Image (cartoon, rainbow, N blue to C red; front, side):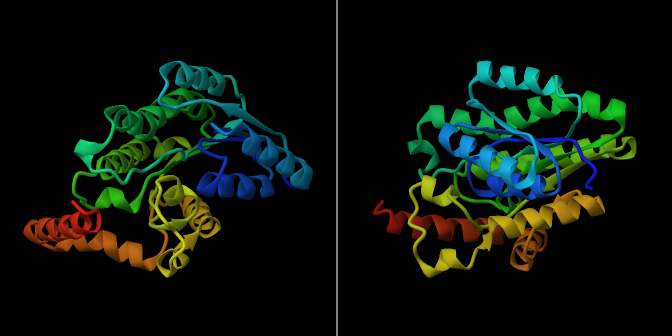
Length: 265
């Protein structure tokens, strides 16, 4: 009989990487609290995981960029006595250039990628530290190591990765682990929700959500702080460390010109 590892709280769990985390953790015996904005998908997933694995699975609907919703989530998480794993997965991207994007959407990205993870970690860490047990996985991105013209996405993910590493330095000797999980392109709904056509061969070569989640949990067990699944992305992260800044900026300029031409700008 499996030992109950406690409760895991996953944000953005209705699809993609969050959903893959939910299925994998349920198979390991975790009870689950799943966050998202699409109730039918969350309800169906909870019923599926309870039926298949006999675990307790419930969901909460919240908009992380809404301060009232976020505060309610924080309070809820403080009341979970056996919360042993927090997965900050919720996030989104945009294909609009910075100056053309709606400012409300840009603000929502900052709130979702930085403010919400920081506040949720702040809510759960005291109890984890008291028990000297727990882990936090912050789903960042390989994009956080790169420079892309006008990309707030890259900037927010860089901040989340840095915060994860900084917190791990503080809590690693107190029984709590923090991981910055930095996948590259992944087969999920992420790009489709941005309005990107994913039917081409380029997208077929992406890692699956299940593959990247497996990599994250393996790295967590080894105590690895920054997890970058896939050799190609490990190499992509190394390149900016060795190439001169002028080369990096030049590549970014070329990318911007190519993108501008493809967008008809």
